[in-house]
Image (tube, rainbow, N blue to C red; front, side, top):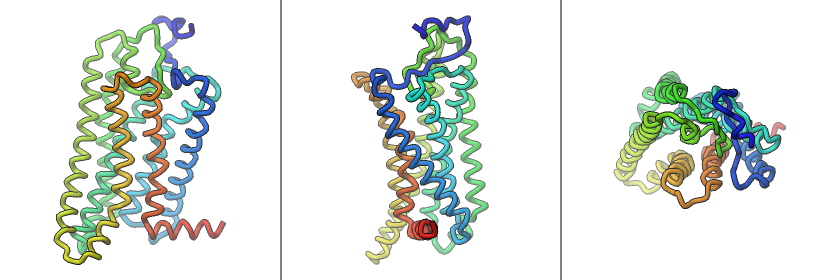
Length: 312
């Protein structure tokens, strides 16, 4: 009934329903979600702390790890506080401005996250294909500038999304079957013409992911070509080992995102709660796993973390 009390003359608010069909299980669902979020915060803040404290880690590769950690923390933090309020306190109301703000930051950080993965691929390319010039090509200052370019790109590409939404009238029924303000879910609540919003959202998603995956693929194509030219099998293994962590992070970042997007648009036969669970998990699980992967696969970082753990 509360959905239909929100007439167009009433306050500009949405109702986030959480995970429709699983309302009775919200408390139980919140347990793994909370654990994922806590592990994410602990792991990524550990990376930030250790890298900031250790002078020997003040290198381009670890500066990129810090950028990735900040993006991972931000992505989960954009959705989890409100999701937990829905699960624990049934606090489902969110203003239209709050909804649009959450959407902007979530999408901008996701675009920035993708940009960091591209820079990491470039870092691995230089390290393997031109190792003698690595220190001169990739300095901390240059990596920071590349990160700034990625941030500017994210803001410029995503800023039209909330601006286009602000011009739309919203219907009286503003119930969103989701735990956060996902773009299409909000657009569906408009009574106006949403063609531009849908087209721009789709185009910008394909442009950002398409360009980034192309650049990453190009980097790894050149890396594979360089590795194949090395005659030593041991050198082959060493070169490929330096890329393992980045490849794992890419797979767990892009695969769930693409799978969720495809099932959302083309999986009409799939239950709604499955779409929403997937949309939450791809924003929670990869950020939780990224610091674990780099902690295990990067010996220098692992040793420093173990040193601080032993001091506790």
